[in-house]
Length: 127
Image 1 (cartoon, rainbow, N blue to C red):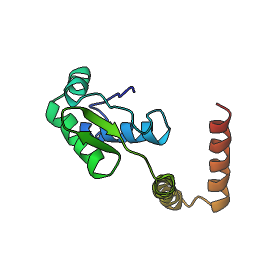
Image 2 (tube, helix red, strand yellow):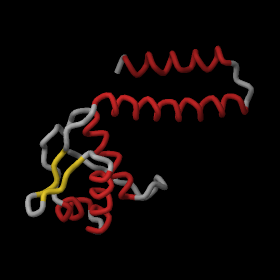
Image 3 (cartoon, one colour):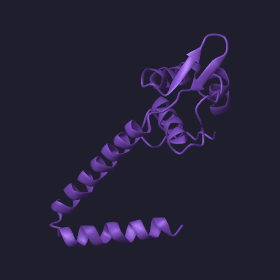
Image 4 (cartoon, rainbow, N blue to C red):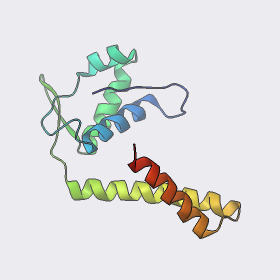
C-alpha cells in the first residue's frame, strides 16, 4: 500500500491517510484480513507524528474498516459491498451536484453538461 500525503491540498493529513486506505480497500488493493502498517512505521515512513496516524487508524476503526488487535496490529475487516456501493454513489452525487451548481452559475444547458460527462467518461474508460 502506497500512501502519499501533501501539505498543499488543504486537507488534514489524517484525513488524507484515511481516504487513501479506504480507497485501497474499495479497490481491493488491500483485502479482508490484510495487516496494515503499524502506526509507528507508517508515521516514520510518512515523516509525520504518531498522533496523526493514530487519529487516522482510530477513524477507520470507528467506521468499521479496520480492527485493532492489542499487541498484534491493525487488520482490514470484511466489507459490506452494498454499503460501500451506496457510500460511493452518495459521493458521486455530491460531486455531480457541485458540477450542476457550477453549470447553473454560468447558465450551462443540461445537454452541454451531459455531453461533458459523456466525453470525460469515455476518456476515462480508454485509459
